[in-house]
Length: 378
Image 1 (cartoon, rainbow, N blue to C red):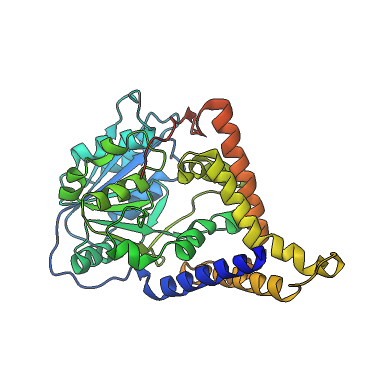
Image 2 (cartoon, helix red, strand yellow):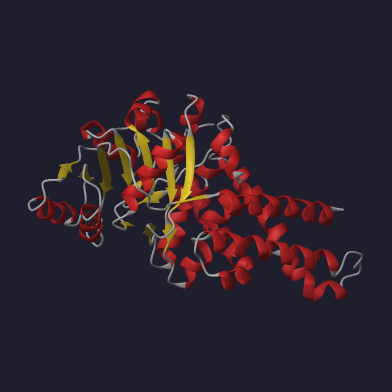
């Protein structure tokens, strides 16, 4: 009976995945009727390796009315100096020296809060220091804002994945969104449970950002992007998700250690900060996406093989199918869908890392800081 339930769950996931593949918005450049002022806000901590390319790309944007503000958040490298060098030759760029981190704030949230106070644009875009923007990306964003009249547009950048650890783990972020969260519900249902956002690119109308209290309302949240999306829904405002379609793309991490720690930073908070829910999630994903692969080759050797091989074959096919579909939607490699069980094993290792941090330090560790416990609720 448990395997018939698992098969039913996979059928539901498949249906959600197919509908999302058909409806998920993708960025596309298009003519604009209006040209609102835009503030592009970049928090940066120890980003010397990327900051110059990022700022040069932003300043090449094909749009007449924008400013770029970068805030150095107590970097230990020369992020500040590199940003200031570019600012000296382009007046559209301003560089801020961040204030000390107050008690009760997560570092990135504090940096974004300071940036927002200096922003002059009608549209405020928060973007990470390692996100790459193509020249037509800003026009595509503003066209989508103009056409849909949303208050928060969140973009999932196309992820550039190179090493095996990146290929096996990074796409699991969009695997979750495409397969579990109905995009049409995010767009049209007002309940906060149907909300998601990606802090790599958040596009606010400044009036909406101020109405929800901005980053001050999620000051302690490790998943501040999700907290902002929930608040948009709570205030009756409109949220839209979009895929970057290679106009906005990013290489989040470059090694297994970076992948492991980067995902471990958020994974417990993404499960409500509850270790039990994280463990339950791990069991759920093994049940759907790992055990059927093991059952298929050894099922004939087990004492009872009532549902073998049809149930494990169907579960393997549907699991690989939804992984391949999410890869197609987000410009990832279709063949990596065959390695879905390994991806789930690696996610279990990441969950273990998060739990170790939780019990040893009271929170995740990132860029030399121990982040405060997440207190943001739905």
